[in-house]
Length: 196
Image 1 (cartoon, rainbow, N blue to C red):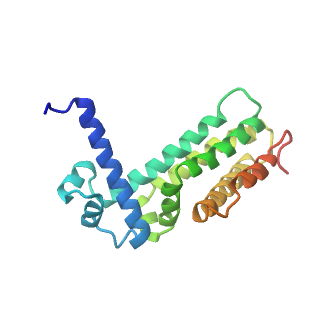
Image 2: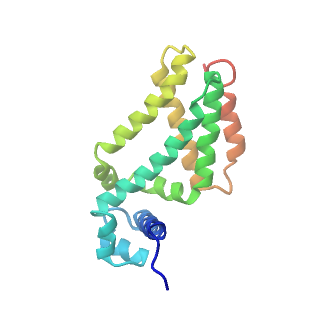
């Protein structure tokens, strides 16, 4: 058997890292962040505790990696806000992109929503969580500013809360939540005229 290429080794490392993250998220959701140990995460991932430390410095590091993954999805949704289309059209594309990403990564978001409100998780994320939220709000303010609304910061907060809340409801009960119809209703709010 020939030795693995560098690309194969990198792929195996990334696969192990993702398995650790998925295992941690499942345990954080099921047992709570505080009650989950590094040993438990390693066991759930089917690796040794020592190997886990090759990827992450500890449980806090795993938590931050999970939230960086969620921010990766958020940043991906921001791509819809770029371009030369009118601001209302970019907002409509963004809304649809947000719901599509939650639908595409449903299991991750279902668990992430269950984990992120835990007090120990909020403490573990420290200043990172407000910084991530500020990035989201700053990005959402631009189209509202371009639309000439008097309070773009408020509109950005409303849209963020609306998408976040609806996404949580969908993730909690995807079989009964009419995601397409709800997305259409939110998009309709941003037709040619600014929201009231």
